[in-house]
Length: 194
Image (cartoon, rainbow, N blue to C red; front, side):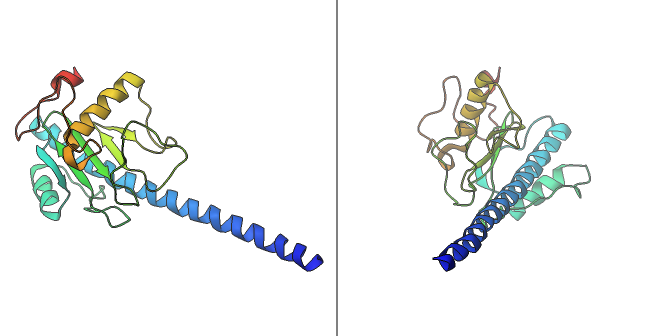
């Protein structure tokens, strides 16, 4: 009996430490992905600064060609940005923009779109999508992201889900009220943001 107690005393803390390490590593990966998403958003913001609008694109996976095109249009040194095409889990990063709004997202560790982008998920899960729209994280681990009020969050979620279309949680069912369908050159979400 004493042997079992000794084994239990040694085994339980080791298992607990392994779980804590696993959560810490997953959170570190998640932070790295948020940094990559933020870097892509910064590139879009720089494009807006130089041209007066965001780079227009239907929902698309970020590619080397797309990054090259964006780099060529921005007249600012970009060495401080970690511009990548994939997240740390090997899944493509995504962007969409109608020229007036943008959304950048990662599908999380599971590589699947979450059923909703309606706000923070607790407890933290590395499978959660990481979604940034117009400079605000709307689907995130609450400990890292900026906080927006409920009405603003609803508007940002509607914009993000609309721009993401079939690549996002709505599966391109219907645009939100007041929005028009995304077409190249369109700025169709002005009514939502106004």
